[in-house]
Image (cartoon, rainbow, N blue to C red):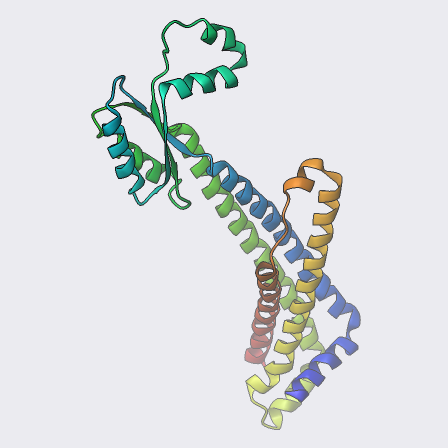
Length: 289
């Protein structure tokens, strides 16, 4: 193992410019992926905050017996998707309208009869706020005879669903694209290193060295370059995060950075890229020797 480390470090000394170029290339490839990851992370966070506002409102027929409402509220609370159930009387609905709709305050003040019905407001648990789950709960609510109408903003919930799925796919595709580019570039730089040491590799094979013994230093070199590139990209992402957060009032309040496990995964991703590029390049050379 000490021999592998020594050979890998010697490679850095033999071609410092090429090694630095490899590290910077991996860093910038991961940096771009990291920036898109930050955008996706904050977009998902914003979507989650919007998602928490998903609510189903069931409007009740007038003169519905309180006992029926209380029994239905208990049954609805037992639904596996339901987080909370809140009964809103017609008087409470009118008070909300008077306080919330300022432009209609005078009109509501002069009413002789309350036109607003009582309702049941249902909030859903996390994981059950997609369009299919909301529609399922709404359909079950329509089964109660005293519920006149059920509303939950179907188009709005479906658009939220579509946006959440689209953001995940876009980030995944961009991440894979830049990962492939990074693998190709690190493979080329390792390939140049391999060609520089072609005579040494030939001598090692002549004295009986196995392919995996020859591959070892190059794989370790690629892993080290991936590690350094991953650490550099994490530092660059954090610098960009601080810069953007410091210059934007909205971002200062709501922007978040990667957590430690996510940063570790990014660095490990860099190591995998370095290993992959090295493995492909050295394997191709050994097959041709």
